[in-house]
Length: 231
Image (tube, rainbow, N blue to C red):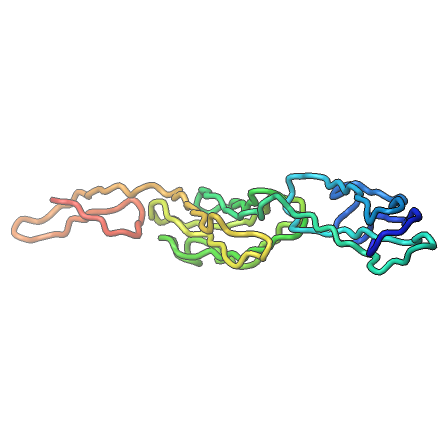
């Protein structure tokens, strides 16, 4: 009250509205407050509900109405801010291995859930592999919907008959939405070569006495790297 009065003052109240949800964020209350004569106020307990989900700070309104005839309402609404004690989720991506010529799923994960959607950009780039000849280039924006902790993206590799050894390409994250941070921005995709290392052989030849001929050193299959052998 702005000042004391000899008579009792009553006023109705209810916890409602705002951005928070009754039950999951706070305990609903409604009733009539009694300020006895000679006093200038009374307290009402507001109880919030804890969880492990990042929501950011939320609000609920404590609204007054229907004051007794010996008082008027000058400020009918008190804003209750529920401060979130959960941290904003961090985003990470795992490392995977894919056999050459097949595809696999790489997982973008959140450290904890959040009520809002989380977005993050990604691109397949770098490493020792070559776009087109070793893998199919992809870039885009991943969406992790509220309440979930991850999403998968398919990575497709290209098969050939050339021995290259295992190669890598990087799955790189960037530009996360404001309700999340990136803790591990790079997933290493190892493309496992399914071609065998070439074997070396030499042929037999016949040469007429007094002339010359060519003997051939052969590989069983091609390789991207140079091959040397002493003779």
